[in-house]
Amino acid sequence: MAKAIVIYETTYGYTETMAKAIVAGLKEEGVTVELKKVLSTEVEDLKDMDAVALGCPTFHHDMIGTMKTFLFKMKKVDLKGKVGAAFGAYGWSGESVEMMSDTMKHIFEMDAIEPGLKMKGTEVVTGEKECKEFGKKIAAKIT
Image (cartoon, rainbow, N blue to C red; front, side, top):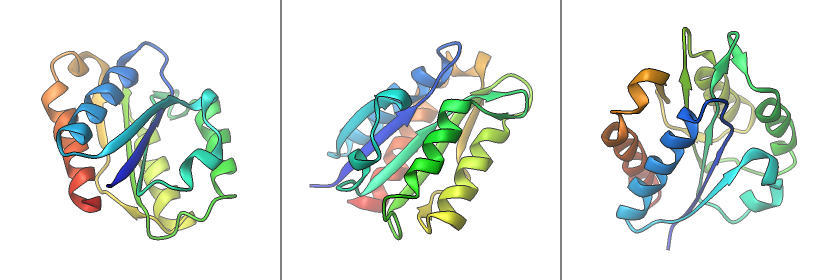
């Protein structure tokens, strides 16, 4: 059975809401999935996963520090060829999604789903369907 992990950081709860809907989409497709906040995740948690989805809001045109630190730690695990996906909420710009996608694709050599999913914070409230579809898109690559 395909396995995925969704790891996220959130500031106002929007990226967490997205993460939960992405997990629901993965589960609807029969994927075994774990949902974890970045600070409670160890890089060893990634080893047996077929897909890794990272969620982080954009704050002042950048990722939140905890996600940036976790990306450095991820280098310790061989993720080459695994599916990677990035998502996040933003207020004005949304750069964190591209930063995570680029890192997955070019540094970890993952099969990154492009484009990642970014939503304006105010759109997240009504964007559950779009987030579930993103989860299903991840599932389609690993099932």
